[in-house]
Length: 66
Image (cartoon, rainbow, N blue to C red; front, side, top):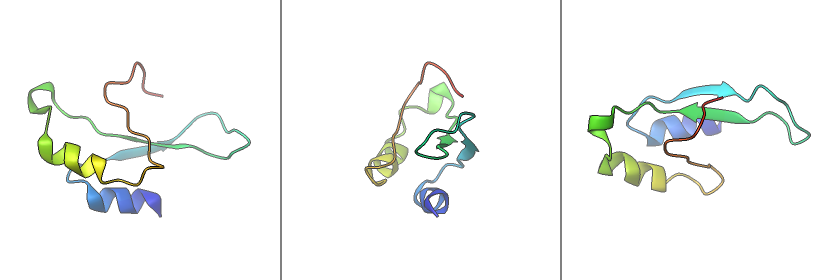
């Protein structure tokens, strides 16, 4: 499962949840990492995020959290 793969690659705990609207493509899953401002940027975490597969979209400081 993708979620388990992400959790094994990241040193931070990720909270996962479903998009509330289901589209023709299916259910979209979101993962949320909360990092305190004084701990960002975190070079180790940035490198871990860069090593995730390209089909995983990463947004830092999104306008909203669904």
